Length: 279
Image (cartoon, rainbow, N blue to C red; front, side, top):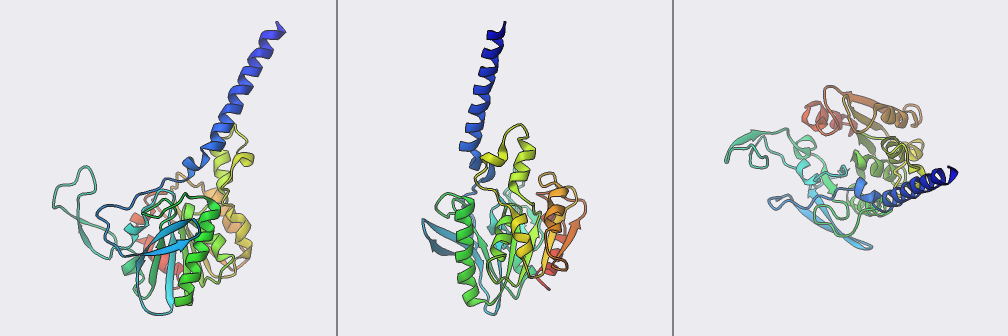
């Protein structure tokens, strides 16, 4: 009687261990969703050579002391933030009529006319070479900041979703003027543990993006922008991160009636970013 039970337990243990191994091996495929550079994308870019990769930075050049560096989400094509047009020809969606004109919200170009804009395409994204990892992206972010800061002494660092973890770590180590975190989290480990609650995620995770570690080190004005109905980042995670900043450093703004991926559809989104940039 005991032998079948032991055999069953051993079988379950083998299956569980195998699933843990698969989760460990393929975990980055659950974090990063590289977006290729769109064939019709015409925004200006500049190359940035870093150890092991050649990055494509989407840019809007502007002379003067002010610049914004932006780090996007894990499945975001950052170049779509740049257009400065009120009407565009439709054709991206499956239900668009050829030649149809569609109204869109202004992009970063109109929201920040006095800033040079630098939007990073992570390794593997938007034409950048290499493979994304937390440490590689962090080193790339440092390289981009150093290049930008040499030309523009007043640099606002922004990050959305995954990019909020990149931005906060960078701002804790470089002289950013201000910091804006959009739909930010306290830790990706925490989010992974909630999603895969029956696995030892905290031991398995390689790219942890523990933003809470860097929040106490931030000494510049910081704005956290949350979506009221965020279905990806729990409000508790954002509020936990908010609580980690030193008193008087950070402010939290919640944009009503939007989700994680629709937050930028609300006109308050760019208004909030301008406020976070000190405008």
